[in-house]
Amino acid sequence: MEGADVVETKKGTISVASAFPVHQEAVQDRDHKFLTKAVEEAYKGVESGDGGPFGAVVVLNDEVVVACHNMVLNHTDPTAHAEVTAIREVSFFFFFFCSFYI
Image 1 (cartoon, rainbow, N blue to C red):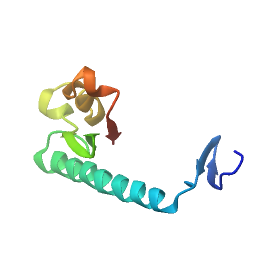
Image 2 (cartoon, rainbow, N blue to C red):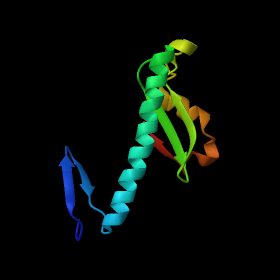
Image 3 (tube, rainbow, N blue to C red):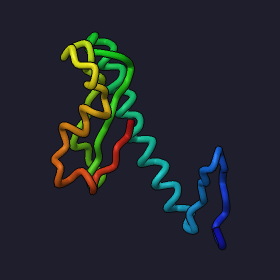
Image 4 (cartoon, helix red, strand yellow):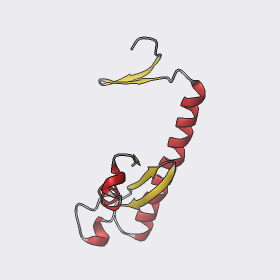
């Protein structure tokens, strides 16, 4: 990776610092914001008894379009994991343009 600063390497993966520190900071803030929402969804799922402690948030253009949690117990469906439910809820057209936080 010529010209990039390697931040961390783990088992074959590499993270690199952005050439623009402000960009990296903005991305980290954005990620933190949406991951926090996914964690909040996980808590909602546990509190309601719907399933395990897992949440997912789907984001398009920096706006949450889908927020859901594990629904395995509620729907008696072993495939109703948070991420699967999120994929089912988002329109196929928008799927490829979205970011998923799980």
